[in-house]
Length: 360
Ligand code: 57M
Image (cartoon, rainbow, N blue to C red; front, side):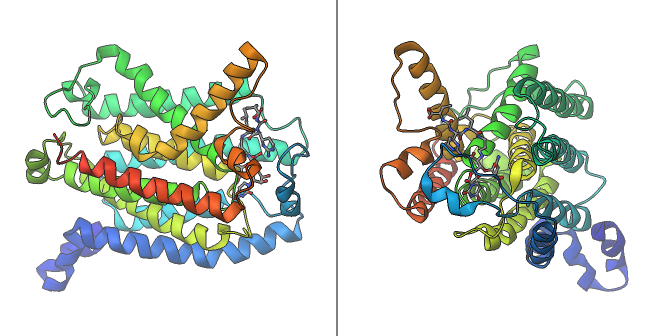
């Protein structure tokens, strides 16, 4: 919004030229999001505490989690506010990709909120898995549909870029629709599964979006994209501002979600952030590399699938408990150790994924 309001003033004073630059607006999106998060969180925590809106802890989990009973949850509302406002302020709001990313965040956030609210009201254990999957597939279909409508018949939409192989860009044709939906829905659920220790999900989310800041900036810049041999998508440059806003919002939330957490993000946060990450991967045409960038989320989701499949077929468990972070807790690792080590793995994976830009 500020871009449209203030950049035209460069005709009167050159200082307003800065509003043209993606880098400038991205930096201020980070700072604005961080400030909103830092200011809003204590108020929301106080409000939630006053209404006794806190976490119910499962009896069958690690004993160290019992002390977390009553921790305010649904902090995702803070994250969503802290990323939406700076995006609207600092991005070019006429850019269609920015709206796709916002719609994905809000739709998946609404599904998570519905789930949290249902749980809070004591109606079953949240919405049923079948209903949740139905809503998520519907939301993902809408997001992918928006991309199709925006890009018209552009053949680039249905192609997929494969890391390490510059010239390998298979065209999935109509199969791209279920593929992109899988990326978005899979990512939303994987982030949700990861959100089981203080800061465990928000740390890798921060790192993943920081990586996509670089991928969107370079992919939205004709010269950089050509030099690096990555798909050039004109609309992408403004998505950098959105990713930067998520980076700031994540930092602001981490301030309060860091061990020992004063607030959890709830399904409203984990589903919104996961849906947003999947959508950004689809929009930036960097879907496959998400497996590496979000490797921690992938490992958490795979651990659950493996555990369930193995248990059903052999009656035995692969891990002491799935998702993976519970396994390490059961091995005796203190919670902060599991968290920080998962963050370290995330950083290494992000670096690895960025290295593929040159290894082509
Ligand atoms: C979300 N939710 C956390 C919090 C957070 C199929 C099965 C593997 C599903 C899985 C599951 O239910 N996953 C969904 C996990 C919960 O956190 C809330 O949920 C939100 C995110 N969705 O924001 O509101 C608990 O996690 C802890 N937590 C923190 N700090 C945070 O910042 O400590 C969360 C955020 C919180 C808190 O204790 O209460 C969760 O873990 O429940 N189920 C499981 O993960 C269960 N695993 C399981 O049953 N494994 C089986 C099979 C099915 C694979 C096995 O290994 O044999 C475990 N979950 C728990 N206890 N809590 C089982 C034991």
